[in-house]
Length: 178
Image 1 (cartoon, rainbow, N blue to C red):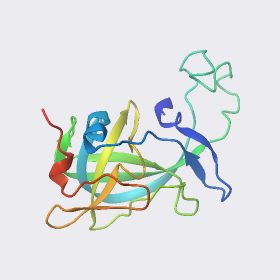
Image 2 (cartoon, rainbow, N blue to C red; image 1 turned 120 degrees about the vertical axis):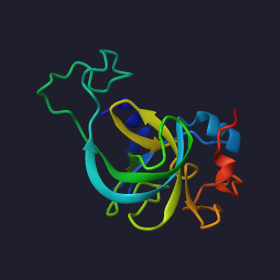
Image 3 (cartoon, rainbow, N blue to C red; image 1 turned 180 degrees about the horizontal axis):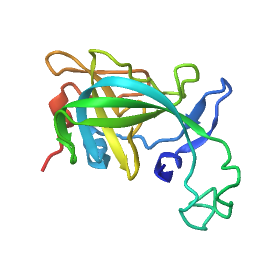
């Protein structure tokens, strides 16, 4: 599992759920540029996984918290994520295509949600995902609040949860400009 997913994680909040620090974006254009992939899609299923830092990411402890640990040693505390299988209905940025199934991870679980995270649910709802790529790992949202929207039948976007002040009205507002 890639360390990029783990770097934003800072601590567990008092409710027992994880907390994280993600970049915030002042404009839609900033967020679109920062994203590796932007898609709309429907969630087919979800599962919970424990994620550990890789042990082969070098010997610098600032880059690899597991530096120096033997391969068979205790890997430390896991970060718990919910991974959603998402069928892409529209690809707006990145090397994904319509009909492809991708995996998107979100910090926390239904029982222990992460602060500021609204987990996606399987079903007929369509979501817009603004994502970062991590080699060998599921995609994750550029920001749990700013990187996720519910898509209406006409393509109108609705924010999910709190903390998203970006003025995005329609799914076409998320398309990467050439």
